[in-house]
Image 1 (tube, rainbow, N blue to C red):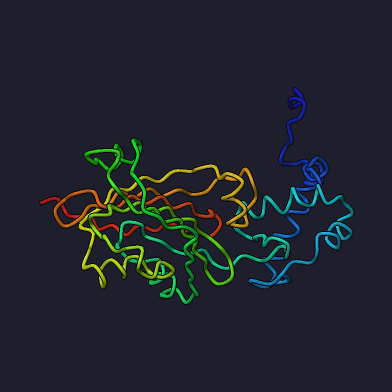
Image 2 (tube, rainbow, N blue to C red; image 1 turned 60 degrees about the vertical axis):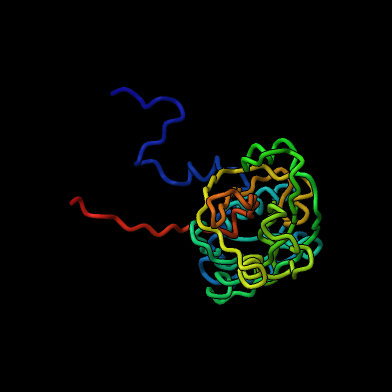
Length: 259
């Protein structure tokens, strides 16, 4: 009878042969996953310091971080700058097709939202944004906002908002650390009628990664939204850069029966 090809593992061969060739950082990852599943590390608790974990697993901190970064990518743990690693809370469930503000849908899930406006200014749209929004001229004034969103004690989202200044002329006098949706509706009587969405992975630059306390060279989950006003004109363009380990996109649909 012919022997199996070199490197082929038969079902009858013991599992120890598979484990023997598994890299150390993957064995560390598997043990930490087991610890999480068994409640050894309860939800939202802090992991031991890297030095202690490296001693436990008999590895270097470089090898340990390979395992920790895999768990971070899977959304099981997250890092806080200068504070260490923590067990991740449940992901935020988000339907980007609904006109519901961040503050509202996060609170509805029993979590604590916070928004901080990092920058706000009136500027010219520029050629790229004018084309994206279908503006008449690149010199048309728009409001630009850069905001960071938090859930509980963790930053999860960076948001760029570009709004037609003629649509909400006194926007910079509003409270931009709260719900922009509420401000537009209650202060300016403005409500978007519809939007177009584009979702894709997007690399984070060093500044974005630092603001989100996320590993540099990682990808965010990017949502671009072009919103239209009451008269069908484009009034707002948003870019959301989410930590992918904090988000679960859930879109509700309803099927119509063939008539």
